Every structure is written in C-alpha cells, then in structure tokens.
Image (cartoon, rainbow, N blue to C red; front, side):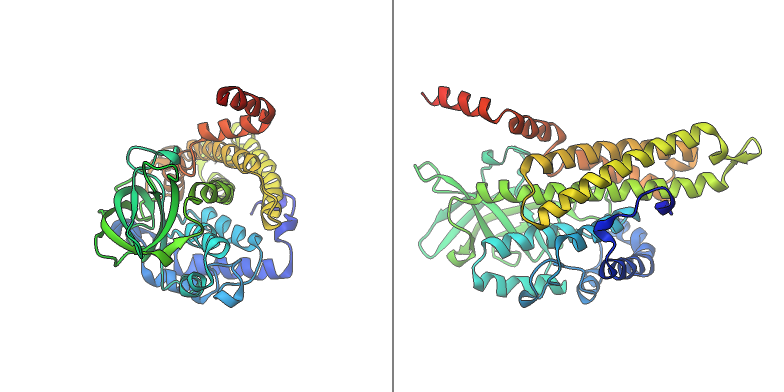
Length: 398
C-alpha cells in the first residue's frame, strides 16, 4: 500500500525475494491471522505452526543446506521478520530460534552439535530458547549467578533464568552459566541444555501487557546434569560470544520495529480513508495527512539505514555501535508512529479487536529487551569515545 510513496527497497527487489515475500504473505494471511485470538487465549502458539514454517523453509533461512537450512543470506530472514511485524504477528518466536540461536550453533558449535540440533530446528520439530536474563540482573550479563560445577564428565547446573522467549515450548535452551566460580578462571560459559533433563523445570508463562501469544517464562535448574559435550564454544568464552552475537539480535529487534511501523501506517491509511467525521473521511483533514506524512518519512529514513545494516550483517561487518543505533532509533520511532496512528483511530484504537491496539501493546517491550535503549546509548557513546575509555581504563588499572 505504501509503495506509491516509499522508494523501492533494492534489498528485497530480486525475483527470489519477491517470490519469498509472496509465499510469506500467503502463509501469514491464510494460516496465521485467524489463529491469533486462540494463541492469545492459550498464551502460546501451536507446535503445528512451527512445523508448517519448517515445511515452507522459513526457519533457519540463512543456515547452510547441509544442516537443513535454506542456504540463503540474512536479507531473507529480515524480510520474514518485517512481514510478520507488519501484520502484528508477535506470537511465534521464530526469529530468536532461527536468527539468534541457530547462528550460535553454526559459529561456535562442534560438528556433532550442528548435526544434532540444526536440522531439527530447521524443520520446526525442535523449538529453542536462550537463557541469559536472571531475576536480579537484566542487561548486566556479567552479574549472572546461575552456576555450573565441573564434575569431570559433566556439569551440575543450579540457578534460574527469567523473561525467556519460547521458554515454555522450548525443547532445548542455550544457557549462560558461571563456571569455575571463585577461582582465577571464573567466567561465563554457554551450555546446551535439553528440556527433558532431570531437574530442569519451566515456570508458568507470564501474563504480559502485550505479545500475549508469545510464551515467556522462567527456567529453573536444580542439580541438572549437563554432559561436557554440551559446552558451546570454549569454557569461559560465553560473555564474548554473547556480546558479539548481540549485534545480530539488536538488528532483529530494529527490523521488527520498522515492519511494525509500516503495518501501523498501512492500517491507519485504510481506516482514515473510510472512517468519516463532519461528513468527510478523517484522511481528508490536514492534521491526519500531516501526522501520517511525518510517520511515513521517519519510516523511510529508518528503512534505508536498516537495509544498510542488513547488508553489513550479511557480510559479517555490522558493528556493535551500528546495531545499537539501529535498535535504539528504530524502536523509538516505532513507538511514536504507533502512538500517532492509534490516536487517529480514536476510541476504536483502544479496542483489542483492532490490530492497532495489539501493535500498541506489543511494541512497548522493544525498548527494553535485547538491552534497554539506555544501554544502547552507553554502547554508542563508548564507540564515539573509544580512545578516552581506553585511556581511563589504563589509569584505573595502574
């Protein structure tokens, strides 16, 4: 609908992208939209929708074909993320599964780990989650207290994780733990923990303001035995891995934001073209036109930047600072756009039956997860003052 005012996005203009987009849109419109109410009631989506996404080749899109993936580049994943957000489909945690956890395994996993998990993930028969955040630490990952004690051929894990996307439905979770606690070798490591492990329990899914169809819960570990072969990467390298891969996660949040903003604008144009006040469509009023003109302009500016970031990520060149800028700016823009659009719906905008109401509730968390926007500003500033921070760190160490 916005094609007449927005420039064609070259990143999605190939014949393969256009065919994939049509397939994604059909999948969403024909197999997902009419299930949202039921998913919200259940607090989670169905396993069938995961397997259907797998059948269509929409999971692990940029994972090599030898591991069951699509063998495409990240721009196809970005397209899927945006199309879901455009329609307000926030329930399935596909992007975390495919675009965060699968790359962890691909980059840092052993060949045995890749062969064991990636094909199942690509098929949708295995759902995954990522256990980072804890009740007493959010963005400060170095402060985690979940511990893994070395027992020779296995680790013994005790602790708790919270706000875990896909947590309740997941069959496997990559969990951040402290290893070698209290020693010179103390550090953060990543363990692959399967949900049927003895002592691994899941909490009841949280009741949230938005994203009501997305299962989010706590994970509990009570003397969970984890084989040594389930260590992801080198012991003690977990923090570095997470910091490096957070750039991708933050870009995903930003892509979701611009997709959501476009969907909000499209919905509002359609509504204001037919809803009348004072004997004329609401869209005929200059205030409506100006508000949507501002929204569309901000959307296009962010689309251009996000397209650049997507290309950089595909070429393994996206920096932490650029990802933080994308996440911070796009989610702030998304929030403003949805707020302006809801206002133009009047009282109906506050009704849950209207997609704009769901969008309003769903988008708020984007400024919090994957690192709060306040943390994003700190990371951006560190990039601007690299030499200053390096000098200060040297003085402190002396």
